Each structure stands twice: as C-alpha cells, then as structure tokens.
Length: 516
Ligand code: BG6
Image 1 (cartoon, helix red, strand yellow):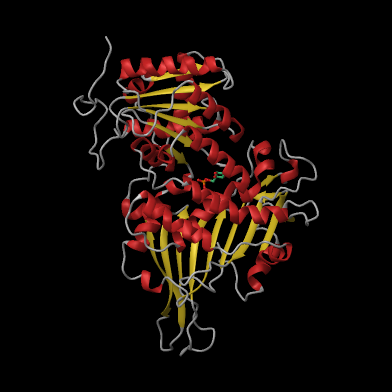
Image 2 (cartoon, rainbow, N blue to C red):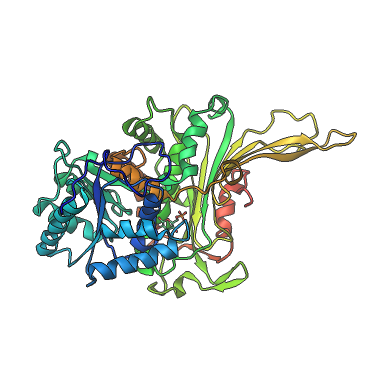
C-alpha cells in the first residue's frame, strides 16, 4: 500500500538519539555521478552516518544516476560495500542500512538522453508514494563540470525543477570546480540562474563543513578577548598552510586541468582567508555571513602584471622523492600526466587586504601536494615586543595557531620564565584539542553540508558573487602563470615543503614559514 506519512507524526525506528535541530523536511536526493569516486567515498558514507544518527528526514529516498548499467539491487550492493569501506563509524548497523537501502533506487542512462530524465521522474514519483518524500528533491551534481550544462537543461526540460515559492522544494548542489576562470564561472552562474533561483543553488566547498573551520566563527565572534587585537595594530602577519602528503592519486586527468590554484586556492584556502579576515556579520544568517566574506575577497589586492606575480607568487611541481619512508613518483610520472607538464602542484603567495582592519598586514598562503605531512592551519603572528627587558632575541612573538587538521585545535604561543634564578624566557603553549575536550569524533564535512542543503540553509555554501570574487583574484594570477611565455613551476622534491623560492618569499620580508 502507498505510504505517505506526515513526517512529524511517523515514528522513525532509526531515531534513537536526541536531536538538537529539527530534521529536514521529507526529501529525495538524486546523486548524478553515482558510480563515481565522490559518491562512494564521501556522499553515501555521509548519508548512512546521518541515518545512523537519526538525522535524516523521516521520509527519505535516494536515486543514483549514471551511465553504468546496474540494477537497483546491484547499486545497493555496491553502495553497501562503499559504506563498509569508507564510513566514519564502524561496524555498519545492518538494521539502519536495511531501512536506508529500501529507499534507494538506480537510474541508468546517458545525461544527454531525455529518456533518462523521464525514467528518473517516474522513480521519484514512485519514491513519493512509497517513502513519502512529498515531491521535495535535492539534486546533487557529483559529476565533472562539463556535464553541468546538460544536467541543468535536462532537469528543466523534464520539469523537474520547481520555482522556490511552490510547496515542493527543489534544490541543486553543485560540486567544485565552479568554472575554471572568471568568464566561465559567470557563464555557469548565468546558466544555473536561468533554470533556478539563487536560493535553490548550493555551491559546495567541503572545507566549510569542517568543524574546525566553522569554529573560526565561534572563536572570533563568540569571545570578547580576541576581537580587539584582531587587526593591523596587533597582528604582524598571517600564514595559512594547506599541505597534503597525498599526490594526485588517480586524478591525473582532472589535475592537469586544475592544478593547485583551482583545486585548493580558489575555494578552500580563500575560504579560510575570508573567515580569518572578515568583519563581524550583523546576524548569523546566510546572507549576512556571506556579505562579509565577499568584502574580504573584494579587498584583496589583485595582481595584474607579470612583475607583481613574479614578486608575490611561487609555483612548484613535485619530482620523485620519499614520504614517511616510502618512495613516491614525481608528478610527471603520474598516470594521465603529460611529459613536460607545467601544472603546478604547489603554490606560495603573498597578498594584502586593503581595508582599515588589515592594511599593511601581509597574508602568506601556501598549499601543496606531496608535502612531508598533512597539515592545514592558520597562524596569526602578533607584533614583536616594542622593547625587551630580557635581552634582545630572548622572546618570540606571540602566535595563535588554528589547526584545521589533523590534531584539530587551537594553540597560543607565549613566553614564560624558565625556573631558576635568572629571568630566562622560553616559548610555551596553551593548547586546546578537540579530541580530548569534546571526546566524540566530529562528523564528516559532507554530513553537515548535506543536512544543511536538505534544510535549505545556505550559510555554509558559496553565493554567486562570492565565487566570482574568488575567481577575480585567482584568474588574474592564472592569466600570468599559464601564459606559455611565463617561467615553468620550480621543481621540489616530494616530501619537502615546496621549492626554496617559497622560503625566500618570506625571507625577503624578514620572516619565515612556521615550522610544521
Ligand atoms: C579536494 C581537492 O577538494 O580537497 C583534493 O580536490 C584535496 O585535491 C582535498 O586532496 C583536500 O581535502 P581534505 O578534506 O582532505 O583536506
């Protein structure tokens, strides 16, 4: 018999825990690219964990769409394996999985065939009847960017997109990279907004789903002692590092197109800059928070000439080396990478934010593959003492370090007296660690973001003007570095913190990268 529950009235057998926030409205998620890496590693494990924590809507369904010819059962089996392998929590609760898998369908077919979308529509209508998903849809584009236009066109033609004011909600989550430069991002925004309203669009940047990244907002705006010193009067400079041990894995084709600037800087690292540098928003809502982030992006001084780029940007590419005792190949030996490729896998750059708060405070960013270890952090260096009572060079400037990952936490470095008769200072650290303070492991970024998208909360998603403002900064640099006349990236050995020129970028200002 058809089952169309009112979600608040129907007891969900999976709802075991207490929930702080209301569950989202009933909803069916459609994952385009269901046979791909993202669906296997991140999306399905995140959805399963939401089910296990009783955070999914009481009425929930999922349709996977891709070209591979699976049956519903094969798809469910494949997803069960992926969840078993990649889930944050283990072992898998079979009772939870069974209920979750009952609402799972598969739709095989090419994206450029209208018949695929008619079949999808029929399956969604069936889920509405069988699972009570009430016509609410979340379309997730976990596909290469080249498919976005055709997906949008087909969804519109199949009348699968409702206008926002209609009773049934339609939302679209779009994975990065959103465009590959400013003109293409603008064109994609245009295309998206031809079929849907900005309120329906969720441009995802998974860094914003990380607990430590969200905590930046609480740290800065939930405490009174940091804000008065968070400015040019007290801060000397800021260093942001996003280093990974990993190389490009099996993603040579994608990476050759993207490089580190599109893969990490345009999105994740600039988001860290925004949250570090933004003014307090007038309210904690999506538009107020994003308005302030955009002001930061607009205040970043762009580099328009080859000379400015040469002075402030260092790009690198890894050669073979060794990481944690294991030999790893160089970038040009990776699968699907062209011999003589000029794609950067590392960048270090310096810029100023032209605002009253930050004028004259350099921000140094670096991101790279095949670094000695995985470390993402924001380090705020305070000004040195105007005069030292304990001898020159006896004290080190205070540094506040926000460790995004791993060993998530926040540390404040200050000087203390070494016990003994003399006044001999040494740096020590006050250290807050998530793991020991809060115990439980944090949810994966995708869990939080999927839940927010189902709820229609856009705070942690990128707005149209924000994505364009980020491309303005990165696009200008790319215009110079991707010019065939420009110098090729500097080589650095895998397992090091980039080429020596990246150190010189700070040394010329009398500074150093924090040792990690
Ligand atoms: C992705 C990039 O967006 O972020 C990858 O495409 C990168 O190249 C990854 O490895 C890093 O994410 P995380 O969460 O592991 O820091």
